[in-house]
Image (cartoon, rainbow, N blue to C red; front, side, top):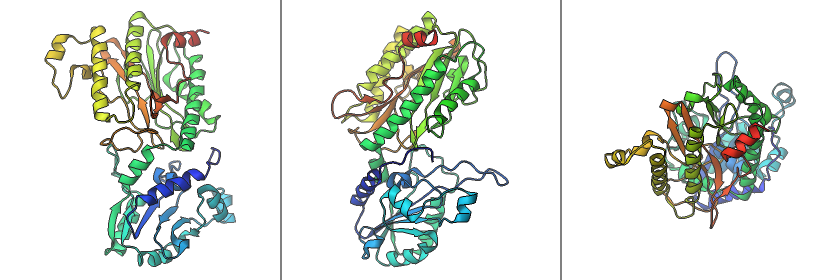
Length: 430
């Protein structure tokens, strides 16, 4: 791992919060992710399952966390099972966690090697009535690939059919949506690395540069600041490409007179940042481009003020729609007739702003959180309104990452990153 060791107090608190939500006589089990194969002996770079990381800080494959607060033996109340390391593994694969290092990482005293799992399982299952299994219940999840967690759940249900099975997901969605101060520091670090990338490319962009060259400049800056790279696949979309919401080819030249929409963010310690900025290729917005840009910026600033405790996200998005409707009227993109004849389920403004304004962010770019409960202090959201005008080859989206506060406006983790049109022009031409 490239990042500095995280204070284990975070993971100790996270486990205590999860245990407090468990039913009596219950065990909760969390698995690491697989290392996913490509073909032959090639694999994808390892990415840890965010739930086991949230609860333990363990960032390596073939790891299992088991929580059993009612275990008769104190040694079995929280346990880590790890792949046993050796000198040979260290030579071929690099350093893996020892039992001592696992304690320093997770704050868990009871660390076993994986070959002890079956023996321990039989002991604790004889005392337990329920098993919390960790299924992926994110509303946007693509679950066609069987995971290590899926295989483990199948095994548990086959080996222990008389136990009751409960879901960890509702607990994890609630707990992970509220950020600890240590997490906010990690997210701030990710955003600070993103800022360095932004400032690097503002002096680099000019007519004739390609989208992938901009992507390369960002990756260089991220890696040199202890990030693994992009938190998600970046969008570097110039001209008409900016009207494709998930454009990721990043293979076209940036032409004089076009605006580039760039949606990217650095990760740090598995925490995501998520930013969008739009800049003129030649360093100067046209009058029309600046009008659209400033309209989006006004919606963003007003929308941020709505992210306060007690608000429901569904209601929030309705209010943002009203803000966008007003701006689109001012730009001449819709008129009162469009509004009068609109489908309530797909309002007129959706022609030019068809996506949501905010999503949870944290260990995942689209992080866990409950959309049916009101916003609470400590939650982290993006705010990213946009206007997309294909007939003008112009797409503008602006996005920052925000922490909801007990009162007042949310705290902007990206408050130091240039966003005003005039400031962007000044930096590009300095």
